[in-house]
Length: 219
View 1 (tube, rainbow, N blue to C red):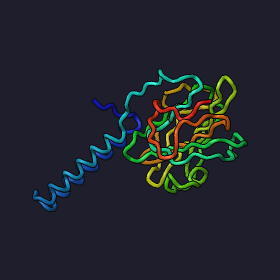
View 2 (view 1 turned 180 degrees about the vertical axis):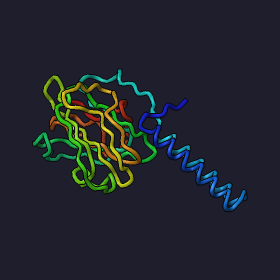
View 3 (view 1 turned 120 degrees about the vertical axis):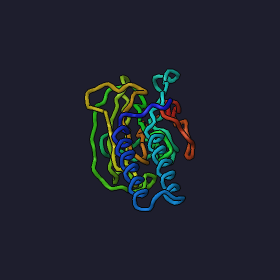
View 4 (view 1 turned 30 degrees about the vertical axis):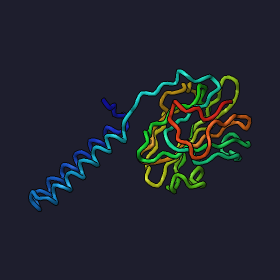
């Protein structure tokens, strides 16, 4: 049985009511025929996809070591490069970016344990999520987690061309627990990781990763 995420319940109700009204109007105006039947089947398929999009699968992180950085998102690695992170870390870092298509689970999870020492929500544009400038031009949230050993990891949720709403549960001063939910991005998006330069990157560009299960780096 598929569990529906709490962020999707309102969207599903709105979609179901809208589709039902549209179908009733179609039948009232055009009657029951092959064309209206096909349209209604298409609407039903679309509604099933909305249910599927907001699925909330169980994820287990018990296998990972304390210095493992897990992927926060399902998707495809689109960027691995050295960059200057100038929002909070103010130093050179290794950036790993994971793009989520509309077919991926869109829940985001904490990639490691530690303390949330920084959170900021940035308004912005809606460039396609794989665009290099989307990391600092699009609507986004930034969360910095500091491990007990002192290393800081910045996780950035980025809205895409289709994604128009980011939900983030992080609060400054709270504990981040590896594998617990960090937030949700609706309908296509990207997650960036900014890691210390001495991190060992364990994925390559083009790899498909799974949240809470793929180790993207080791500190």
